[in-house]
Image (cartoon, rainbow, N blue to C red; front, side):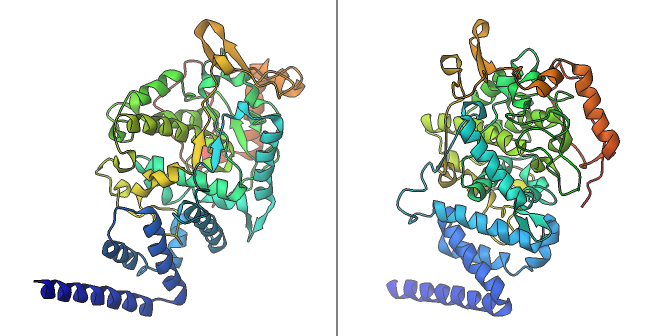
Length: 454
């Protein structure tokens, strides 16, 4: 019996080695390197696959012509190699032997209004450095933004992979900035009497909220379409309310909070769509949303809510990393290779749920009335709504004369946004996110848009 088992083991070993040799002999040196990377990435992240299955998966992947697949993702080879280098940093940081425990809670993400002016400037300065660093005919920031378009959109939205894919995407930005991404808790704005008057739409934070962004840290940014960033806050959709967050956290299994959802009141992705539409401009379209840096702060908040959900799962004994829903959509099946990383093809959709990625970051809780202040700013950025016992955003300060004057005159705000489109024409952003939630206070003056300029 023992002899027979040893013979079968020898046969399997020889077969695997032979198959690997055949693949390496039939692809070029670059693809051979990619095959090795696939095995390494899978061994680090995919703890539940046996070695033979890992090899089989990587053999299937790299029998493909990966270079030709770049057009599927609408990115250049220079951009792809840069993204590969960033994801390699992420993979290296979660590997078991990487500098002891350095990978645990490497980045602590905080609500943007709890940062000091110096911390906020440090983050935005690093984004501007990426925007200025050339990469072929593009730049490093746009290279990262360009990942979020093309074929990726169908598998990164509309299903459970939405959560894991965007978690990896956030980590890639942090690998580029080497700084934690703050999150934008839009519920702090939703519960204001007029969210468009939030301090975030001043030059000290996000900058212009109506029309061409010509104020704040992202002033004069030009998108890959050759036009300026444009916003039109409060036009449609909805920011996320505290009730919405509580609805998501009232569930216990991922199948209850991901798409396709029988009840959008519990769908984290459904709530996510609302702020995209509410801001309008590039942020309102899946194809161009990441061109506005607000994208990453919004998604850090979505990730924060997801991590609160996962923490509750752990408390009741659910292994969150393996609670990946089985869905009919083949693009969102757990074992499918995650789109978007053409040169690192070893990550599967379910790997986005892995605890090793989760441990890359920690979150400071969003401010409550007990700590609804930030004395590091020369004006209020948070205030306590005592009657409702909740922390909300402070309005635009009078010191910011341009933003303050705009916030006090809605007619001028809307006219400014419309004049931007009159100069540019319909925004070349493609189709928009669909929001099932609509704030009763929105105006209904969504900016016109047209096909994306490639």
